[in-house]
Image 1 (cartoon, each protein chain N blue to C red):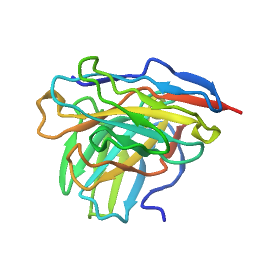
Image 2 (image 1 turned 180 degrees about the vertical axis):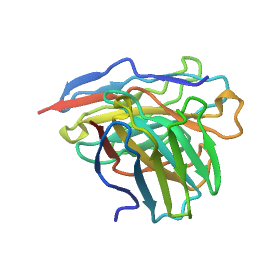
Image 3 (image 1 turned 90 degrees about the vertical axis):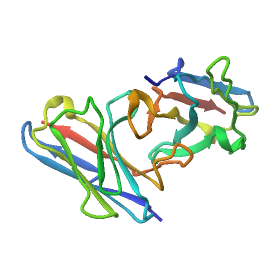
Length: 114
Length: 113
């Protein structure tokens, strides 16, 4: 009954080699989020989509981009991964952008940069 | 700015003992507060939120605006409560038109038999 699906679960890339992580949802939620979680740290919001409206966090590096071709799918593109980009990447969804609704998280993709 | 602080990285208790996971926040507006939990090898999931005023799996949390705290409590801990717990605040910081969830660093709770 997976509702937020992330593929792959583990991704290995080389320094500077572009990589794409994917997220899909069966909840038909309006909002999709991407978080970065480094070891022993809190999840940190990178950006989110409210429907087709993209909202980037001020401190998200330009190296990180996102696409949402339809309601169900959202992609995280890292154009030139550095060693510091190794982390767990979490996708989440919510029905609206209100704080009164909870977010549903995927299992995460663990990115290793060699 | 909005900030969440969980002062304890690790917390160990014995089964049947009371447990309290501390959470303090900083936010200029009216906050929406949550506790999320991550059990071993599972995804992050919502445990409870302050607006619901409910008890989930025996856990409760009360928002104390005076002390800017949202501590999570359970009177009798069980081994299956062992997990990582994150306190989170949803707020509209920085003058943006949208809100976002800010997480604390998390507390690893271990309940010993």
